[in-house]
Amino acid sequence: MKSALRLFKLSKYLLLLNSFYFAANANADVTWGKISPNIQFLKQQHKLRFYDSNQVLIEGSKCALLVDTSGNFAAVEQLASDLKKHLTTPLCYLVATHFHDDHLLGMAVMQHFYPDAQLITHQQVKTDFALYQQAFNDKLEGFEKSIELSYQRLATLPENEQAQWRTKLERAKQRLFRWQKYQLNAPEISINTNKTLDLGNFEITLNAHQAHTNGDLTITTNSGSTLIGGDIVDWLPYPGHGELSSWRALLQQYINDSVLKTIIPGHGELTNKSQLQQSHAFLTAITEHVANNSGQTIEQLMLSFPDVAIKPYMQESLNAKSSNLFLQAGLIRAINAK
Image 1 (cartoon, rainbow, N blue to C red):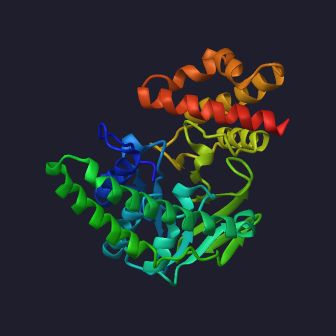
Image 2 (cartoon, rainbow, N blue to C red):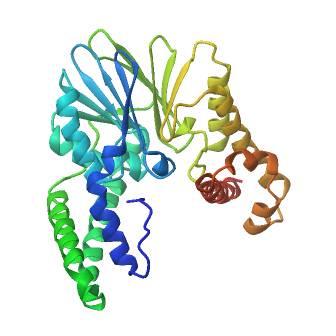
């Protein structure tokens, strides 16, 4: 879970559990917006725009398809319930655009509630899937340890606070018991080039890439005018696992595509081509900065990084914090790729 933790002077375990507790209502702030008659954009709340993912629901006359899931399991449970009210056709497909926790791990929740929906991933993600199944189990084990340690620390809190924390912990424990029954099942469909699906009078094309990670999927539809690009098309790109050269080339392809009009990212608001140009410039600056300053440490590279490439991301405090973290990850990635 990547929610911000704010309570003062409590242990890190109680902080985690506070986030764990309030996560149950987090999905209320997800905004549903209609992109076209067949496509709905489920935008993550603004304060989590760099830490948790958007979702996209596509529905034809015969089938529906969901793109990505939140890393917040309680929010995914709420989404599973909300879908039952929104869907007019069976949910046939679940698409994970890549392997990061906030896109893939919540698929275990969706698979529990929609067992007939087929999970689709990049071929590389399927090849490595045992790693992500272990990551799902590790996340649950982390929650369990946090609950156990938080119970131990209850005695250190003032008596007037213990009752409310005990209630929160009991609710957290019940959620964990429920989540431990879920399993992240392997993909039924994997893509290594592209694949077209007909959802019923509405076709989509799944495209495989190595860009944001070594196993990305995007979706194009509406005669190529709409792109569901996952984190590849985020305004602030996370380059820590990126294939930077092919990623830059793909962004340039999108920028030059005269047919492409609507760009749906994995995080944040709808993206436009001007923002893609900024993303491209950021990734290019990382690559060139590492290549031109081979003797510098990460700290030196951070300090000497061109202002023109980072300045657009420094307008808000959350943007600034995230962009510095993303920059550091990208510099390390570029060094290791040399």
